[in-house]
Image (cartoon, rainbow, N blue to C red; front, side, top):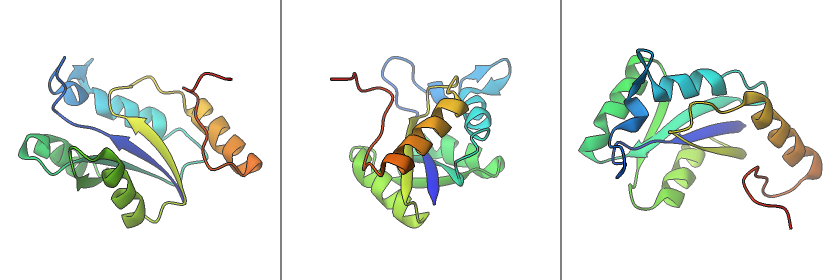
Length: 130
């Protein structure tokens, strides 16, 4: 199962609440999910946020919009991803941050295909080549 896990918190230091700030009347997180849903190689999308009360609006947004969500540690992002992946039976995790509304679903698919074909343990489009 290939799952996109979008990490999202309200506690940005530069722009608090940015993941739910509206762009043309639609929360940024919804713009991102709409783009990620266009991926052909993802089986599911889950928003992973923290258990802190300040992140309740994210969980409420997901619930109201029929978006899967998971709540875990604010400080231990790796543990949040691990537990989320385990709960949703992910074999492959596509790690995304909740403040990128212009993600390219074609690039997501190409990366997933490359990962599967090469049988690599990890693939990224943000690591500079050696």
